[in-house]
Length: 99
Image (spheres, rainbow, N blue to C red):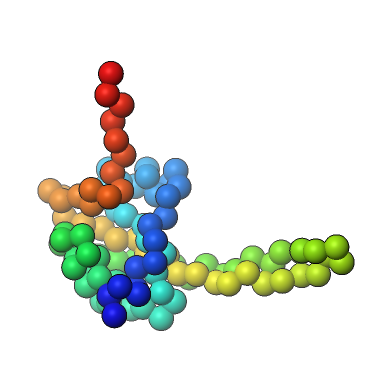
């Protein structure tokens, strides 16, 4: 079940700005609880999670096609996960320029 909880990491300027504070952002399943998210991150990345904050984002209304009909994009859920001070998630760390 853990494989379906974490969908993808959020890659934005804001999310990368929170990495020095040890906060990582993920898009998660809509029905996932904070406990399930914590367990999934700990098992997947081998880190200790201190706390999890979740946000449900309502889908936008877009106008598409020649007749400009409106469609509702799907809602999604984001999780902000804070890990212990001495740990990091290697997959999401920025590479330093080697010169």
